[in-house]
Amino acid sequence: MTKFIFVTGGVLSSLGKGITSASIATILKQSGFKVSMLKIDPYLNVDPGTMSPLEHGEVFVTADGAETDLDLGHYERFIDATLSGKNNFTTGQVYQSVIKREREGGYLGKTIQVIPHVVDEIKRRIFAAGDGHEFLIVELGGTVGDIEGLPFMEAIREIRHELPKTNTMNIHVTLVPYISAAGELKTKPTQHSVQELRRIGITPHMLVCRAEQPLPKDLKKKLAMSCDVDNDAVIEASDAASIYQVPLNFIKEGILNPISNHLNIKIKPNMEKWDTLVKHIVLPQDEVTIAFVGKYLDLKESYKSLTEALVHAGAHLNTKININWCDSERIEDVGAYDVIGNSDAVLVAGGFGHRGVEGKLKAIQYARENNITYLGICLGMQLAVVEYARNVLGLEDANSVEFDDKTENPLIYLIDEFMDQSGNKQLRTHESPMGGTMRLGEYPFNPKDGTNLKKAYGPNETYYERHRHRYEANPFYKTDLENAGMIVSGESNGLIEAVEIKDHPWFVGVQFHPEFTSHLETPNPIILEFVKQAITKN
Ligand code: GLN
Image (cartoon, rainbow, N blue to C red; front, side, top):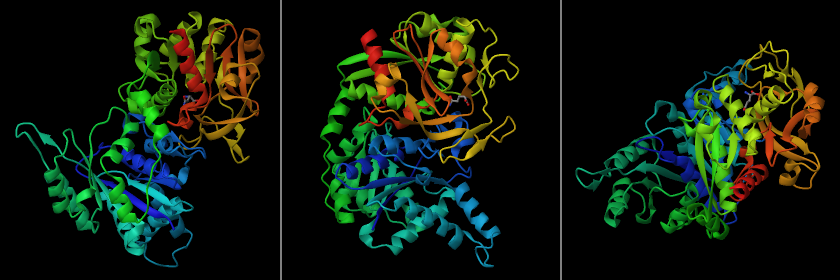
């Protein structure tokens, strides 16, 4: 029978509930348990796929092609697991299912209400996510007191009521602010948010308190008393030098006792390998600087998986990765050299829309002509192909139809028919709706012998990586590109998945997003190889 740990948040958002949840899951996983995770998002969007990265941060794509909350990325990176669409759901999805069922007559003439129908659908989804696992860590987005969170709180309360006491645990993440004028840490916001939680019928079993100052013993005792949790169940969470340090800090803080007591289990995590990797992140031997060219630089969260993937590679190479953030629009104004400077390598990330594209092209040309280690991801590969066609093949108007749908030389084009993961034919045209019409999720590819791609991935014929894009490199130009020195190094059923330049020390573009499969313990092969190359060149 699955045991459920529900993580709620109080006082304010951005307290690191996702990292807290992932850290607890990591401790259980490293103790040998079968653990999975679920993120519930109370907003009405069906998924974050159509939200701007500036609004919501990165959209994380699962292997089965679901566009999910970025917290799922943290979960996979921490517990070294492959999750799926059922590990994240939103209010939008819940209502969509309930209304669909109502239209189909599935409720046999009943009046459909939040309790029980909506809450039942929420419970069904929580149980489905826990299926086959010993533990499911459920993180509820938002803050206690939010109107849209109420049905989910009710579902949590009901599950807690239905299951044996040792099968559910509530952890509440709050803030204990330090008021410098008074020179004091304040417990009142935490007390109030726990009161709000109890008003809904949930008394937490443990508090995780974010604080900028260490919490004195008597303050923890006061919190335990006023919030009605055990004395050893007030866990301090101070800012950590690396998010991967958090599970280690929690263990030091004594989190094992309250969890094992409440859930009636023995927890003995083996954190040896984890500890070494964290040491390499916090106190690395070497360092390297990577020019990260993108356009959403105001919100670095929109490149979360990629920056984390660089951290993973750095941890395995005992090297600190300094990121030189390069705004592609600035490159348009002042040129590549002034922005990229002497960085050891250039990385052009994925992206959508016309803004900043010419700057990215300049960055690519700069890396190509100056033999600088280059990795282009998704749009970063597409533009590498466009740049090569323009400046080496001499096709001046080469472009992606995303930016010029009338170009005579559509190096990157829209294929209107392709086979999806399940072997079904997919159709997409310029008129297709924006939501859910991209090539999404995991697809196989075959690296070509003798290429850098093959060297990075290994001896197998087929590997899998995840996709999120609408356009594809046009195979019509393959022969011309190859004759001119740009090799197609990876393919998937006729689709071009990777390119590289023959006469360049290391220049690779990949159509997929390798960052989505990088975990702390198992870094992504092509990103690891890219960082290795950057190190040897510096
Ligand atoms: N805009 C490009 C496409 O849709 C690239 C997308 C991406 O980089 N994720 O194909």
